[in-house]
Length: 101
Image (tube, rainbow, N blue to C red; front, side, top):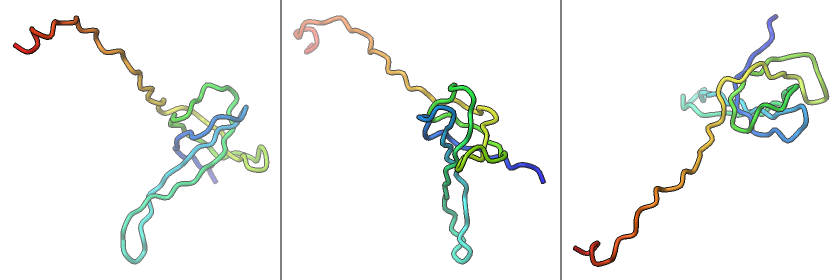
């Protein structure tokens, strides 16, 4: 039996060699046929601290590393989008009389 692979988003990286990955999937209600999201968090092992919150990663099932850690991060699919706030362009001051005209 092959090992499972899941795609999720890192929601915590505060531990030394562990990240918490949130995996979402869509379920359908058996009677009403409405689709809804279900999320589950997995603790995954990493060797280096190159992963940040918001990164999308692939995790793979492995032998138990600790009590709760049974997954390993395989690779990064997409990095977190860092929104850089740029300073607005400085506009030369105009006298109030010119603005009113």
